[in-house]
Amino acid sequence: MLTLVAAVSAWRIALLAMEFNSELALPEPAAARTPPAIRDPRTPRLSHRVVLVIVDGLRLDASYLPAFDALRARGAGLAAATHYPTWSRPGYITLLTGVPPEASGVRVNLVPRPIRLDSIMKRVTAAGMRVTTASDIGMVPPLFINEDVNQLSSLEHPKTRDLVTPTSGLTWPFDEVRKADTMQELEKSIEAVLAKPSDLVIVLAGDVDRAGHSRGGASALYREAAVTFDGALGRLVPKLDLTRHTLIVTADHGHV
Picture 1 (cartoon, one colour):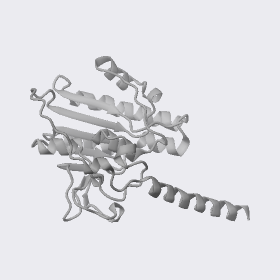
Picture 2 (picture 1 turned 90 degrees about the vertical axis):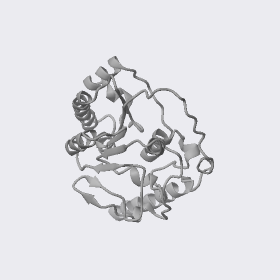
Picture 3 (picture 1 turned 120 degrees about the vertical axis):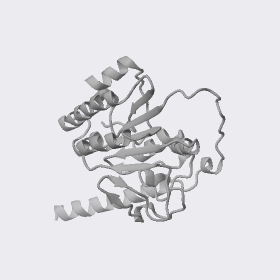
Picture 4 (picture 1 turned 90 degrees about the horizontal axis):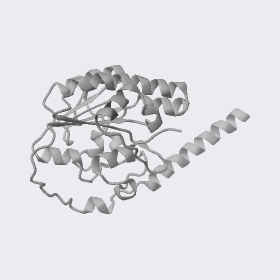
């Protein structure tokens, strides 16, 4: 009897969570109806390549590791606060559009339709430059599909090994999209996109977040995932020329 009650309770909680997601999402925020103010700074190009690495779920104190610390010593280290509750997709959208959750309309992980906000990918593409991405958790590109789609979850995007292309008839502001299944495979996907001319490279790594959801942010598994990513970061840095390239490593949220 207790097992049945627990199962029913879990089912009701799941339904409430789905309703919560739906109610908080804003289909068409005012920011999407406002044309972006684009001003040419008329300055020389400051970086030949920008690599943005988003470590899903990495809490600040968990980042004090050798590769992270080496980057702090060479560049700048800052603390950032996220919104509450901490969800991934609102964080992705804020990082890629500059629009916070209260204005973007993306306040939870449920994103039924493409985002109609200007983004760094659109700006780079409009300037005639190349955008690539590699991830081992979810996928960012479908969130920014250019065409109208009623339900993003209904789409299946063709995948050949780790290379993903949009569903026939659809486009997104990425020239190359790679989706790996593990952190080890993600490193190979990153190597693949870096081997070609790419002006903006967006990397999304998910092992730390998975460990946080599985065991919590204070767990040995979470710490181990952070250490593993730090090792991957240490192998990534030598592949870049930091006198000409810009590397930004951040997180969408943390874990408790």
